[in-house]
Image 1 (cartoon, rainbow, N blue to C red):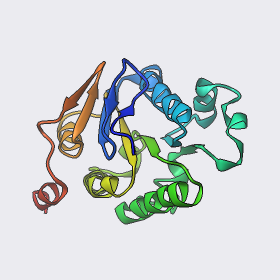
Image 2: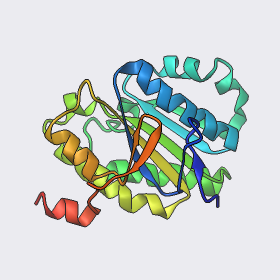
Image 3: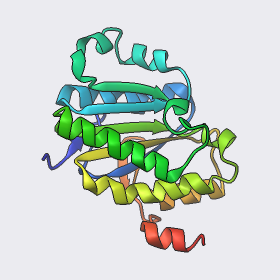
Length: 201
């Protein structure tokens, strides 16, 4: 397995197993982070999964019109909506979403033969569906236990036009690394899952 995973911008790279969050303002800034991350994965032969709140087709267009056609039968790239993933059973459940990743990543690596998995997920949907965000922050914490199980990275995308205050504190507590502009920061506010969840009990 590779020692580092390129993010596609500014020659930045992270270690496999990294749970990374990135902050942006608006769709254009989101795509400046997400699109190079996914294109780098496609070039590397990774299984790539992208979850966005809306505009699945616009993301496909941003990646290149012929991308979907050029990936063959292995489904190297999945661009999905929040409703198809986080809310596929109508409401959000930490365990159901972890099961989703367990199933999809395991199949991609063990059955489809991909050497690595990279995923990017947009999170603005949570503000409408999960008052207080307690359940989603539980999921973000538990994701840190899942990441090391497979050769993979996960990039969580937070729009600063929608998130702020106490929510940002919990976001920082659940992500070991933060992408800020052209820099990857070791997050000094990160708290291990059991400690984070015990503090909320």
